[in-house]
Amino acid sequence: MRAPSWLRKSLALRLALVYGLLSVLVVSLMGLGIYGLAARYLRSAAERDLKALAGFYAAYLATTAPDADRLGTLAPELLRLFTPQANHDLRLFNARNGALLAATRDLGPLPSLAALSELGYRRPTLFVAGSKDQPGRAYSVSSLTASDGTPLAVIEVSRDMGEVESFLGTLRWVLFGAGGMALVAASLVSLWLGGQTARPLRQIESATEVIAAGDFSRRLSVGREDEIGRLAASINRMAAELARLEATRHEFIARISHDLRTPLTAIKGLVINLQDTAPETMQASLSTMDEQTDRLIRLVNDLLALSRLQRGELRLVRAQTDLAAVVYSAVSLASEKARRLGVALTADLSSPLPPVQGDADRLQQVVLNLLDNALRATPAAGAVKVQVAAEGEEIVLRITDNGRGLTSEEAAHAFEPTFRGPGGGAGLGLTIARDLVLAHGGRIWLQNRPEGGAEAGFALPC
Image (cartoon, rainbow, N blue to C red; front, side, top):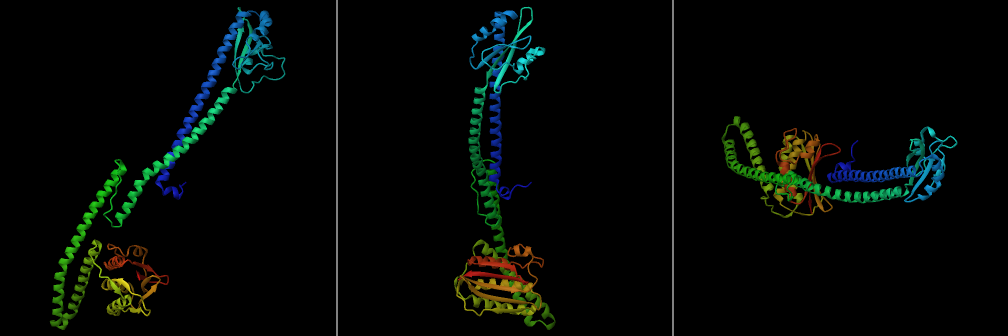
């Protein structure tokens, strides 16, 4: 049987429940132990007292009335001397026939079960009703014998156990009340202990989520010397090492990108010069070299831009920007690629739009990256449509295609720089687009369309 979800999701509640149940178990066992010991002691003490009194009275009566005749004559007078004291009552039964000879108080003519057992085969036969002990009374018996060993009588000493039972009842209520108070206190302490244990774990969980998201500056301040404190210190060391490695990576990417741009630019110039002078038979190869050189330059520029974005070094030149004009320019630049791929590229920019505060060049880069991704995902004879409209307090751009759509993995990780889809990935374009949109205070998405294909877009505040 599985625990409910609210309990599985909270370590503090589980700890509090465990502490509380243990406390209840301990308090219950202690209460039962105290009550059991007290009851056993009081009842055993009463039995010992009764047994001692029975032996004393038996010895006294045997000395005072050593034969059956004198005992029968003196029994009422002797027992009258033993008036009930401390709730003790005495009854004297004839050893030959079990008849009641005398009693300090009228408790009936029938002997108790203890006296009946002591009488043995001399049980009375003149009584129709069977002997029964009165409820709430304790009994002890002793035999009287003559000097020649002949049984004379059986003396029964009994007492009302009402006071003992009343005390035990009061003790039960006291223990029950104390147990209830202990349970409440244990529950409160358990909740506090559970919270104290789970609070640093929640801080660690929050910090690790932030670190996993890429913020390596987060540090934990759990001032403890136990296992949780050592775990927090290990996480802090891990975050510091990750921050150092990330800084080293960014520095390496920035340097290698900068160093690659110069030779690539030189190669680009040489290819262009060769295209002007080379014979026709070499033009196809030179054209391929030119395209691949452009691709390498774009990748290097993307690496450099991404590195600057992630380090916060890329400065946006913000101004009042007509997003429609930016989109129109990007569509014009992408139209040649769409023609080569056999994809129909259209734009719906008819509505007048309010301006946005942004960097026009960087926003054009975002649109081009999204268009490039859509064109590559669309098969020949397919269509890509660009729409820009004002929706509430935002300007929203949507780029839709009728391609194969996205897998669940692509939809979840498309903007991550290390993700490569089934087709080999989209480079760093989507990652750069995401970071640029976020730098403008907007939001970006890539999702499947119900009617088929995919939709990429972003929204910027007016």
